[in-house]
Image 1 (cartoon, rainbow over the protein chains, first blue to last red):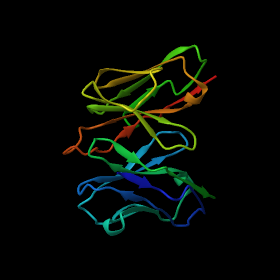
Image 2 (cartoon, each protein chain N blue to C red):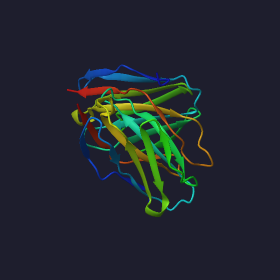
Image 3 (tube, helix red, strand yellow):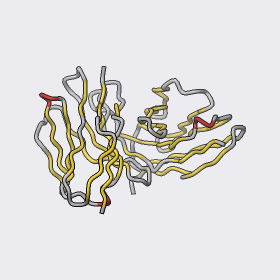
Image 4 (cartoon, rainbow over the protein chains, first blue to last red):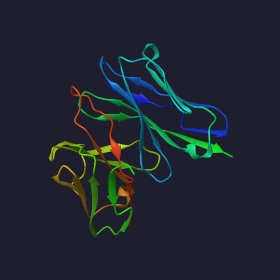
Length: 113
Length: 116
């Protein structure tokens, strides 16, 4: 069975703090993709990153970084020096070999000024 | 701008009404999706279309009827809905899968539906 778990339902931080959103996945596939999406209050899910299961290199994009560890089946997302505009719901997702994306339950991040 | 538009953004309808949601993508993708997002619940995939053909119906009640006239347009026709159908309905599109694996989907802003 394929599954994505985001154990943190809600996180609240103060602006400029670093914050890590956890994502743990389950799959028997040897080839798969992992994704992160951001859903601001406006509602639209914004694609942030796709990661190939064969590429465990960490990735950094500005204040965002992703840590992919196959040994622990985790694909965690860190925001450095958080800002109020980072407040949103963040979803982790896993590709399935049936052509569907398996989404986690989402983590609501609130960044307070 | 994401390249996926949805209209209307907000819709209030009675249980006896008939309405339609529209989605249009300008990304040249071949796959389109309808999702339902209810409060405190994960995203629920409703329908999938590949090259205008429906390839997935996730046990969705018949009061929701999708239509995909071409690869750029997707509709969701609604009739005799129930209050529990109130939710955010999201449309998405994506390029073809790679070696059978789903690739990233691009979402529209959603239609906030309230059934009274």
